[in-house]
Length: 327
Image 1: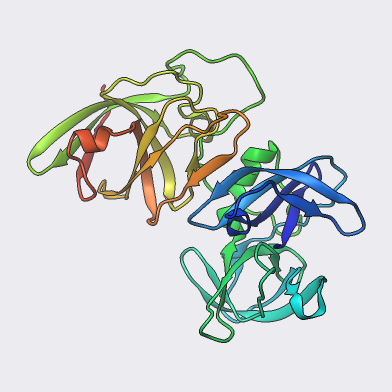
Image 2: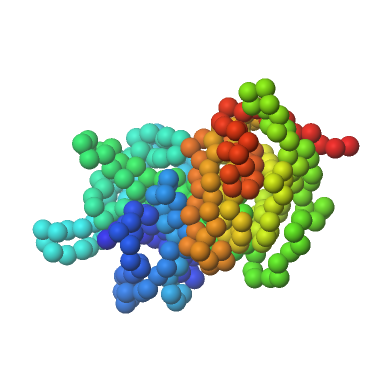
């Protein structure tokens, strides 16, 4: 049992992933309506976030605020359906508190959280969602945590295919969206991206006095990053795709419409390799559900290669990279 909130009237619901760790298909109880069947379309183990698609529409979405505008001491409200075992019933609750601390990936709050609150929205005083309640520190009082809503916006825009409900009074700059995404169903594109979409370059990786050379496609526009390696059936062993962002971030990648297993390296602004993750092909690459691969570091560049490339070539975090653009 847990809580959640609607982010799109067509039936997309955000909640906490750990609610479903025991297995089974989720059901969603909408106040004033019958229980609805749902499916998990994406989940992030590191953030403990899951996105559900509820059968049928007609749901009212909450507006999303900007977690980046929160400051220590700001007042917040948490809504949810905590378990009330002693009374043998479930009922909605509202608790109030403040932002205790802004961490890199989490918002620390002191509003009361109880079993069943997980996945519920954390709201600012304008009623905008600024976080998702996910955890509490059991041995302490008033130390609870929420995932910042800004971490989820790229994923939500991708899943929904249009802007998510957002407060009009404070328009937000769109954060970078590194996740390879899908447009509406269409024929598979050619194996190589069109020259107008991807740049080309030579990427040299230096480790322990050795150099490993790659020929990379470069995705540095939102359109190119959204396309990524979707629908590719193969990738040359010495090939890859380099995602370039305007600033450092820690957003996750997923494998929607991606047909080949990949490894991804996250690289900082000084061209140092920070972390490597392996990404597996989803059982259904078009409809999911999809795992989201979120790094533990902030990165400026991301390099996707055939799965196992880094291991086969003895490349580990700490390696230095150099990009050469042919004239």
